[in-house]
Image (cartoon, rainbow, N blue to C red):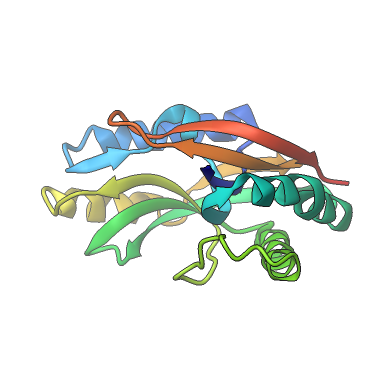
Length: 192
């Protein structure tokens, strides 16, 4: 048996989360052909793990996340600006950016990656892209009305959504359903 998992941090500050959700609602009002992330699923993925075995889940819970929590102090992230992968004019993913705190997020990712190798977790998904801290807001299905997103980008490309503490890191299960994914916390580690 395997479980589809990822490691993430959440937007812990309610006011900052509310600002992100307001932007998402504005984006939805433009009649773009997008699949927005459900409000309750908004998070920052540190590492997608894929379908992993129960023994690998246990190693992540009992060894890897505790290693991270002992090495990294609580910190703050600033959510600022929006963007898109691969580009603003041809977006496939629309996101909110992270400025302050990204060094700590890179450190967390580096620890996780090296611990995955050190613990021999061969069933963990190999990432295809370099880590770039962001919060996915929506996936773009087609280019319908995309010019409206380009206009919106001009207003939000340097917008400050707020500052949020990062006090814990979570191992989450992702259950895929026809109505979108359901995320469930499997384990939470408090940072120092």
